[in-house]
Length: 306
Image (cartoon, rainbow, N blue to C red):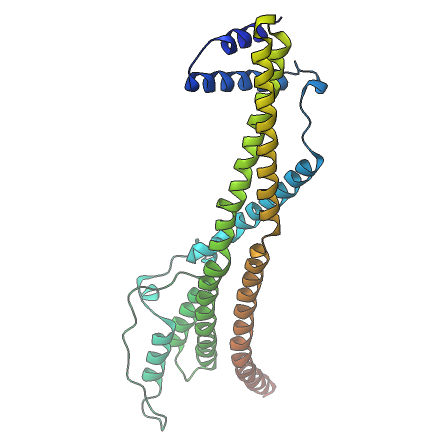
């Protein structure tokens, strides 16, 4: 009998209470795990788990890895400024400007003395969103105000800012939709049903170690302790069967859950709606900017010809 086995046998052989007996089982299974890790247990002495169980383990691992991998990237949608250019330093006046309010004030300042209705200047809200679409819109609005409506580039920048005002709004709607329809439920699946299945698997692992430790104790037991050791093995076998059945049921349940597919569909729908809204907004202004560009190029060439 080796040192580990002597220690196991002496601990298991003590006439202890229930909590102490639980400690003894925990100690024995810990010893068993260490011996297996060090290669001190022959493969045939390690209880083989059902193939169905092992196959389900692999599938659940793949499902968990899929959730972790996508969540690692998609969690940026929880933070509004994920695409905000960190290297830029927007001025106080730029950050205090909303695109919509800036464009209204641009019109108010540049339509005076014309036949067009002049909107009243408005005060923009204090807090501004820090996203790339908002930053582009603010920069274009500020540039348009500086150039004025008499300048073609100024008018084009105002059109661009107007388009990006809609893009920025769609970006915020996309993020809200992704958080509600994908991020939160995706994370919930990972932290609840998948986690429950993982805990059930851990219980199987502990039960299997306790069984193999009990078998080692029986193998090394003195004649007077053989019957007790045999009962311990039988109880451990029953426990492993029960724990394995529970784990199989829970793993099947999480693998059959349609929620992840539904959540992924919500992610795609949210992104599609954003890109469609962005394409529509930019398409509506691009034609007008192109007209201004063609006109400016025509005038430039005409002036060069003369």
